[in-house]
Image 1 (cartoon, rainbow, N blue to C red):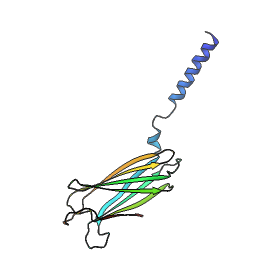
Image 2: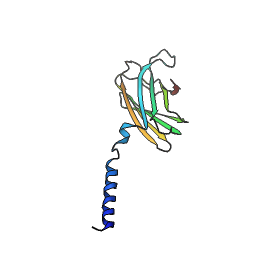
Image 3: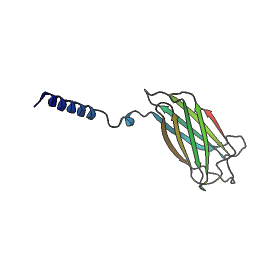
Image 4: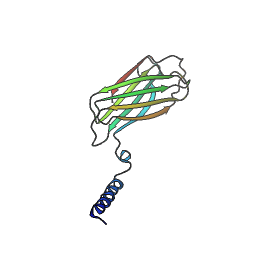
Length: 156
């Protein structure tokens, strides 16, 4: 065999071994952007003596070794038992490693049955990021119908 051909075969072999040694699922071991709804329930949050408000506690975590996003959007979808959906968008401008926020939805637990909250989270920056979570709960209520009257966001 000629010398050039042996070098070519050795090169192909080394490159093949390099590709076989690269982990196949890096994202599963080190998630960059993860969101979790920690808790959702109803209560009297606005002081009107009616337990018709919804409280949602959620956490967003940036994986170790990744840069924090410059901006994040958290889109909440509240689905009530009748199938109607209400939306709230929370935008966080600034860097963080872990952020815990509480979303209060006033005058929104007005129907009997199961409620669903879905959270779609988007991180903007070098890596970008997306994650989602859902949470089901059943506030016992006999209040009348109507649309939510407001939303508030706080740190917890």
